[in-house]
Image 1 (cartoon, helix red, strand yellow):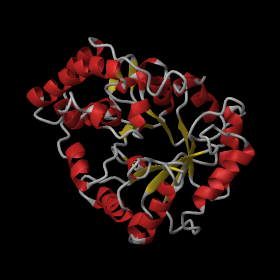
Image 2 (image 1 turned 180 degrees about the horizontal axis):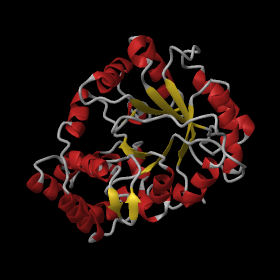
Image 3 (image 1 turned 180 degrees about the vertical axis):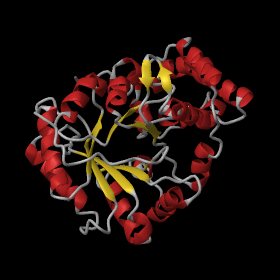
Length: 353
């Protein structure tokens, strides 16, 4: 199947994006009024971005809470400002979060998502749809072709891939231009360097959206300062209680590396651990000659943060890392094996071809 040549991938100009999952997919989400002000701050302040990342299923009792939040945000904002936004939304999952890449599943998901946004293409943000997981029952080429029909109709503007392997990137790119690939990437999860995803995206100049860039809060000063009580303070419904890296045994093991990185951040760069974690990704983005890759593609971390203070904590202390800094950080990481799956053994989605 040859790629469609009359369409172009969406250009991502920012250095980073903003993930909205923690605003709604949490046991106790903040009030909409607070979250809307936070999103406005992210998209208009000096450290802001025009790229927002959301999900059709980002909610607990109300699975569509994230879409409702984004709808209210747009309705309460200046259309002249929101028109310049790029919003990437994950969908294509059944109610039980099982992937559905069929024509019917994709159509149902996209039609539902776009119902929350202005229908006039000239006045709405740029919309990117990404099937949240690869459906093992449907070839990725077919799933992408179904999404592409909505781009051709003008109902959405671009296609992203999520949680895919290198071969899926190849197959999908042969069908339609891919605007970005969303995968987990952080100092505690460098899988894409070794599994071919970073190399394949770099070959094709497809930007990577790095979700969980501070590893669900593991890579923060807060966690280091509360090492002894961190796990006991988690809400019983917090997703981290089910994430393998946060099991008591693995948490204790991984804290050795985290504390080494914390020490480097504060003693060598005079910054926070979370800012170092983001600075590390920004350093690798578009870097030449890194880990056998002649030129790395653009990588945009998408940290969250439910308040202005949290956002400032993440981005207020971004530092420029030298090549020597990067080499030292990589050596620290390679000297300490990270234990634990990204989710659990059963839910480790990075094994798709």
